[in-house]
Image (cartoon, rainbow, N blue to C red):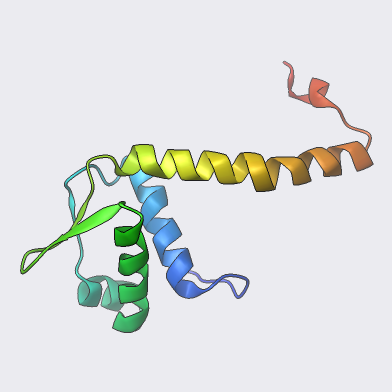
Length: 112
């Protein structure tokens, strides 16, 4: 996994797991690798992985079965979509609209 400096690594890992859920690579109740397994796989300290898993657990995206491991929550996809759509509409879309206005572009460029 390639990391970039603008965002903490644990957030990039959490985003990557969410992307895998949205793409269908991970589905509800699928087991995900343990903190140590996943950390070793992508070359990250287990403490960093644990922060990612704690964030995702707090958001209801994954859950832990003690002694068994971490699993994707049944409603994970729905929760991720809700959060990411809200973030897109509130943060990214206004910036896109502003940039389009500065460049003299309007929504007609999206019509076929």
